Length: 191
Image (tube, rainbow, N blue to C red):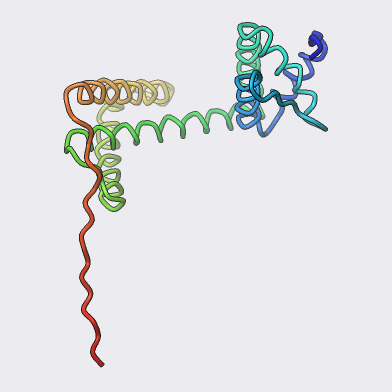
């Protein structure tokens, strides 16, 4: 394993900044770095330009993290990747919020949802959040320039509240039991 040069690291970082597969590649590189001591892996072909990042991650984890933070910042400044990353982050936060709301309700009830119950609960919860968001925006956003910041504050408030309530419930309660299935008895056809 040879020491990566500044030029090689720059090429690797630029490749990641421009890549459509950034998240997958970053996760792969992280897994290669973490599993290096047991199963060393490197890229071949077109992706071999990323190998210096793996070497840097194994030899200097702190420098590796700083370089990845720089790549993230560059992607946020780049017009062609900014929207994609922003949408992906929004959806990731939304899925985590929904998972926390479901977990909180299951822990509170003491048993897990069936798929149908989960869908109904999420539908009602989304309606409640939408109604609360409208009220919050009326109170906190006087014009369209403040709306985006107010929406971000609203979801941060919801997320922190969910996380704190979930932590409290998990500390004080037993885990939810799995859903019970209704036994369907079918009559035999005579005929």
